[in-house]
Image (cartoon, rainbow, N blue to C red; front, side, top):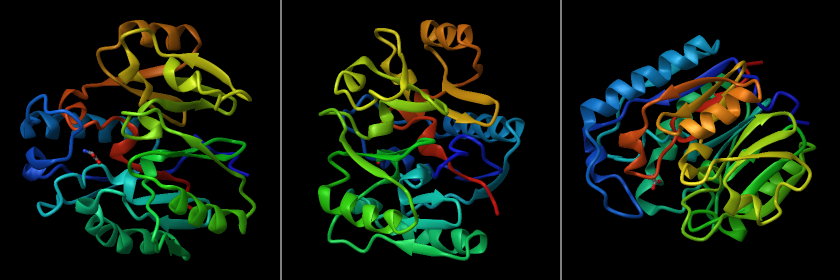
Length: 263
Ligand code: GLY
């Protein structure tokens, strides 16, 4: 199925626009500093390079403040990309802005047409299955439309629930390897990872859960030392990246890229 769930050759990112100060957020803890965000974004891209990625860096889109969070607009699977239909109305236009880039890479590009909604941040691909968390941004109809597309291609999709008050499913979890998930305790308590080995984020470090495994490296947000040490003790090769500005908009490591294996 998705045997290469953390092995990738390519990534797509988009530079943060100065309009980022108008980005969506659950709670207003101040505007992100654009200059700091550019610096962090450059570090993120250089770390993807270190992990072996060929990175396509798209230009900033001033019209769409949240467009730096490219993961939400598409799902990249071997052989097919699927354009999402974001639950946030202000983000729907980002999808069309991504389409031509995906068509350069993929022979087959499909789309979620609605009426449901689904965002890539709610989708975790593992070696066994595709997990989709229903959330404020992803509804049952959106999940059902994706399930119909991927089941035709031999994937098993399992619908789960994103914890209440959490933006996306992957705000609270990441894939560490073929059988291991990094998860907050609150998400793991739902039982959704019963068939996996789970490593919990340490108490008070829940925001560390939005990390990404890209080949041999684990990119995680800086500032969560207890969780970092736990992961290093398990043998993961960690790279920390400052995420203070994206965090003000509920964004993390996974949100900042689309990751895939070129054919
Ligand atoms: N600020 C990211 C989002 O709400 O989609």
